[in-house]
Image: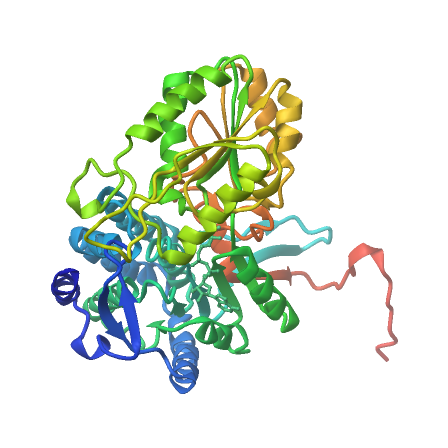
Length: 505
Ligand code: NAD
């Protein structure tokens, strides 16, 4: 029984017993069984949490940023200690294989480390003024409570990309996790509270988790006291949320779907490409926003590479990730994900595809769990389901002859998240990375499109939403910019040479 293991993990992670009952049943995709119950946040509780966050903001914004960083350092410390337990809970609740569950927690630790350094680097510019005895500068100030809405497939890492930055930038965080993964969220909140107690003087309401469905998310989206919402999920969700936020002029960071592709050129190291493609297309059972979904292979190497991929796909171990490290493909999140996958494969066949794999892998002990063999789909052209994101392990493979045409096809989808090229020819590589190359937010060379490090800004273009999170200067989205011009002289020259001489008597 998984539920007894979940109880002991929640105990170890410090989740109070009174948070573990309620009307919402939490299900594990590993077995399909109910592993716990939790209570949704009522509208009143949500409104109170926002009020508390607003009060916390008044205090927290005045704490020097390196002291805010100290809280995040302590959180990173506790995450290190909890890596195995929290990683295992990610596996049980989201279905990831064990190394990916632990990897997700490692990503949280990494962003905490990054944010601690950042807490001493919230730099603004000084800018040359056109007027004598004047100086211009930029300052970055905290913005206010940040709403964070997250998807099931990265149940804890996405919160940390946002929260670690938001906290050092001086903002409280209100988190609405996926309704499919509330337990890992409660565990992270417990770890946060432990770190806050060690840090001391942390205002109540600096970090809150609000369990619930889209209604709880909508309450945050529509609350004028929340000036910034960072939302991760499907493009359909982002379209609704983005429109609502724009209506009240709130800021948004939208991290939405992807329909990511790679191009394999004749000069590629094919052994390297094979491993990279297999991981990018089937890792997390195809349920990453950066999962490789479309593969363009030069016709001179197409048949050989497809033959090898077929072998790899047929031999991949699919099953309950708790059974051992040799399992590389865990379950889909639920029955709906399975039905969407089957529908996409049917549609592909209608468009002339040859489908290898994709069938359900029966786990006799768990009839309500949805295990599948990843699908390798040879497509005659980029049509039908290839043009959209199906959140499942389906890799559509297509031939190309000219790189320019392949890049055009690569960009001819509505999403723009991640991409990659496999080549050792610098002209091909540079073209792919150039202004006429990939139109995505992430463009890689000789690695797959998935598995980003936290040091870079993460996000994508077009219907991926345009947001950026994590490294580089993504922190700027969590602060408000103030441009100040200081006159240290005794005259008042106006900008652009404007004259406005009043009679001063
Ligand atoms: P989803 O859109 O079903 O749900 C995501 C979150 O949004 C959930 O917490 C949900 O309750 C909430 N939500 C849904 N509608 C809402 C509304 N109208 N108002 C407020 N909140 C609302 O997505 P999912 O199935 O959990 O995740 C899979 C999707 O997320 C895929 O499309 C994937 O590509 C995308 N994703 C993107 C990134 C990224 O960084 N770009 C990362 C992970 C996942």
